[in-house]
Amino acid sequence: MSRQTIQISLLLLAAALAIGCKRTRTPDAIAVAIETDPQASSSGPKTVVARGSIRGKATFAGNAPTPRPINNQACHGNHPKPIVEESIVVNPNGTLKNVVVYLKEVPGDSAISSDTPIIDQVDCHYIPHVTAVAAGQKVIFKSSDATLHNVNMQGNGANTGNFAMPGPGMASPRKVADVEFTKVKCDVHPWMFCWIAVLDGPYFAVTDDKGEFEIKNVPAGTYTLNAWHELFPPQTTPVAVVADKAAEATLAYKAP
Image (cartoon, rainbow, N blue to C red; front, side):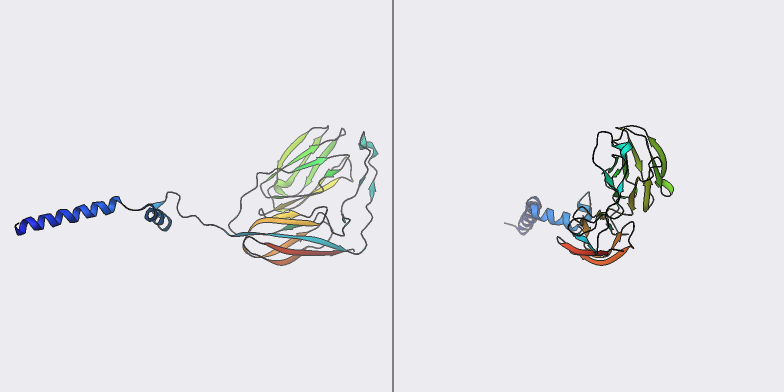
C-alpha cells in the first residue's frame, strides 16, 4: 500500500469518528447545556425564590370591654339575633380580633390576588368588620337586608364613593387603589361602619376569632411586621422568614 493511500485512509477514519461522536451525544449533555446556557432555552433561566410564612396571635391583657348592644330593631325583620358594636372584640381565649398584620414594600412580588372579598350588610351590620386587600383589588359590597342602605366610602382618591343599596340581593364591586385604612359607613343607620385595609402588597392577614393570623408564601428574609387596629396604637416587630418554615410573632395589647 502506498504512502498516499495510507494518508487518505487515515483522513477518512478520522472523519467517520467525528461524525459518530456528534450523532451519539447523550441527552444528559444536552440537558446540562440548556441549564447553563441561557440561549439554549427559549424561556431562559428560572429563579426559584425560597419562601416561608409568618404566623402568630394578638394577645389581650386586662378586662375586656363589654360589647355595647345596638338597637337595630327596625332592621331585624325575621332575624332575631341582636348585634353589638365591634370596635374592640376580645375573643373568649383572651385574644384580640380584627388586627391587620402586614408587611410593607417587599421587593419583587407585586401580584394582585384575583380574590374578591365580600362585605355584606346583615341586620344593619357590616360583615366582616375589617377586610384587608392589596391596592388594585376589588371588594364587593352586598346587601342581605330589606331596608335601604347607602355605602359611604370615606377614603382618598379611588377609595371614595357614596351609593345606595335599597334592597336585598344587591351587589356592587368597587376597586380600591390607594394605600390606606378606609372607613366605610352607612348614613341611614349611623351605627353602621367597617374598615378596608388597602395595602401595598400581598403579604397580610387579619386576626380571627381565636386571635390568630398567618401570612403565607413570604420570600425568605428579615422584615418589620406591622400591626394596625382601629383603636389601639400601631405596632411593629422584627421577624426573620426562613425557607419552608413558619416564623412566629406575638402582638400584645392591653385594656385602655
